[in-house]
Image (cartoon, rainbow, N blue to C red; front, side, top):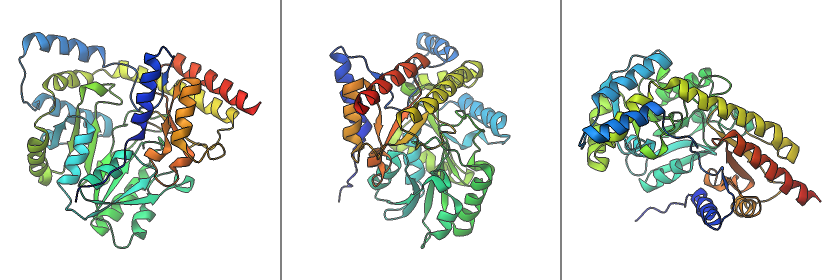
Length: 377
């Protein structure tokens, strides 16, 4: 029987936003989790040169895999065999590979609720069973080791995300270690989504590999490296599973774009430019955290990283999709409905992405202040 999955409702908001923009309306795009900046200058320079000199083709760059190994050594102090990196067309195929290479139809995989919409829907599409665990303020909207210990029977796998989407919360090192211990004891395969690493405002995010060498790690050039449209990511698989993951990758997706692989290698060395983006996001985050409580929006998940603020609006609506559409139509500020991330309680939440420019953030705050003020009157 074909799998039944839910829509990605933020795309509905985006389509409405684009329609309004085409009609001449001013729209601030805070609905998608994508940087408003382009690829690093070094990456674009390399891409121009490659376009003129390389016919390109199916290819997996040994130099990029070696560059990623250097990145892990520099960032986490870990020595990783470059051959463990399977290059993919963004993080989404990497997630599919991790799931397809490890689980059989009917296997149960645990994940936090709220969590990224595609976790739940990709699990369903692969005929796996998502075991969504409600996670609230007591665990900072994150999975904890106690959650996994309490599941009976133990799931076959677990998806961990730190920093997380939609909340931006980071799992502290000691809790990641505790999760890894439970996974070892209960034979649970850990898949760690680390695509927001580098985007931290409180403390650096730790990789699950520091505590569980057998974990599968999903990485991406889309977020910190600001290369969304280049569609480049990776799956970092345990050595004994690399061949299987690579076989799935070759048959399902062939290779990542050759041009993107050349550019991605250059992006790994663009730290100064990329840290400038983080400083902008940090300022935008601070502006929103100061402004939103003034609007009565003071129930906010702590955004330690990524570029999201997840806001409880239950005093205003129990239909977050309709609320986001109304907000967009009346203010031009596009936001994402919580039902994408939580099919139970998400009707009471919205998500704002602050991966826009600071002037856009300031403009969005002004529009929201005017809208909330008019509603109060």
